[in-house]
Amino acid sequence: MKDRVEEVLDEIRPLLQADGGDLELIEVTGDGVVKVRLQGACGSCPFSQMTLKMGVEQVLKRRVPQVKEVVAL
Image (cartoon, rainbow, N blue to C red; front, side):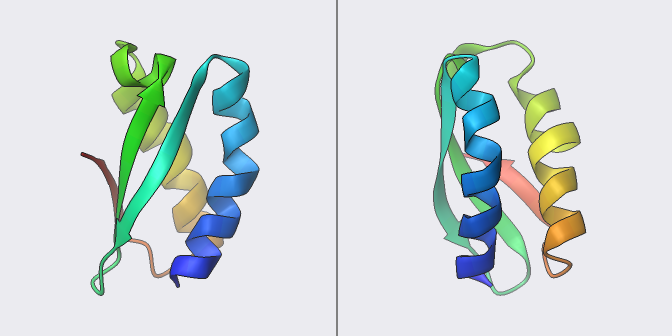
């Protein structure tokens, strides 16, 4: 599952990078929690949690059904 999550994140990354941000995959747990670290502009953006939940998490859940949640560390 980690490889599939990484593939999807690689597709999302250019959108984040276009606004000066990025994310790093830290861990994919056995119970479907994806842990990421927001970087660059995403790390300090007041809308980062919305981007994480409404953007990254929704895309991952759709493309990798085993994903239950995405959390930022």
